[in-house]
Image 1 (tube, rainbow, N blue to C red):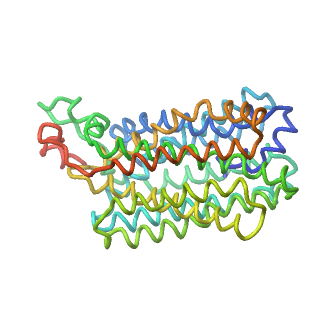
Image 2: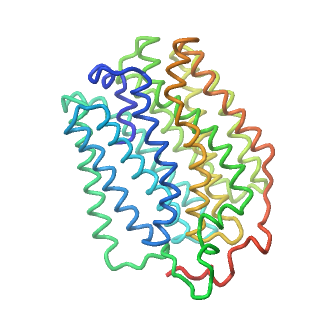
Image 3: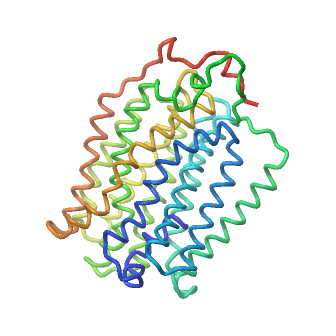
Amino acid sequence: MIIVTPSALMTVIMKDMGIGYSEAGMMVYITTIVMGIFLFVGSSSINRMGAIRTLIIAMVFLTLDGVLSYVSHNYLLVLFGRVLSGVGNGLSIGACSSLIAAWFDKKHHGIANSISSITYSVSVAVAYAIIVPIYELAGSWQNEMVLWSGLSILCCVALLIWGRGKADKTVVVKVTGIDQAQTSSLRCAMKYREVWYLAIAMAGFMWAIKCLISYLPSYLSQSYGLSIARASSVTGIFSLAGILGSMAAGLIYPTVRSKKMLLLVPIIVALVVSLGIPVLLPGILLYSCIFLFGFSHMSWSTVSSTLLMDLEGVTPGILSGLMAIMLGLGTFFTVFAPFLFDKLIGIVGMQKTMLLFASVLVVSLISMLLYKASRPSDKDRIPSNIDNTYL
């Protein structure tokens, strides 16, 4: 809820703070950019402290975002709060993936990833549905942000109580006589060729979905006269569809031999419908396109995450490095997205700008066409005696 509030209430925040699309867009994009950086930091944190402690730290950073938004009306300080949200988000993603790999058998990775993705999609859908009504009750977007901080504190306390005294299998024990650079989760992850193809495809997906989620509520409100609440609810279709997409991917993943088809089909569908979203009038066709995009995006994300878990020699520690590469690469390319979006609006208008952003999915499609599963060579594999050093 903390993450998506600035997107759902973008027009309100712009008016309240006297800022434009580039500044408001940066409030949304900065979390993704910083998330990418701290996916890599989180990989090291998980190895040293474990995933549960890393999640507790992530909740603290999310709490601070809401507090800063509440206590200050200064744009730079509020933006710094968004940076802290990005830190929390980056730390939590790798931690959750590592816990799935540590707690579930390989044959259950698909359904476990599916449940995780469904939980995420439900959360985002609920957030988009209730943010505007709660904003009207709270009286200001700052008051709402501090409410979400309260929820983060509760999550933090729950993790502290639940994790007390429990062994964390994601903590890596240093092995005497083994070069620590050799056991680095990130170094080991970089040697898997598959992750680079998936990272490029994910970058295109990130570019497109971030644009749609960030600007679609404002676009529908300004271009077609939809209320803020209505436009936010329509955008929430992405997440509702993602629930079904994640569920479908988790169920069919074990039964389909050609994993490449599970990667190709969602991208083709997403590319086609993303080009229809900016040009269709509010109605059944537009809502269908939004649904199909959300379905395709989350089904592809579930499949790609499960593929990484199933690569030969992957341990919970290495998985955190693989997830950092796959998700982190795309975030670095989004750093200039809000400024580019703002400039393009002034040149070609909002509709064509959204079309241009959506067309980046062509890069994702090319990457998946080139994707070929392989195994790392013997010299690239993590030493076999390190696979069992997780307590």
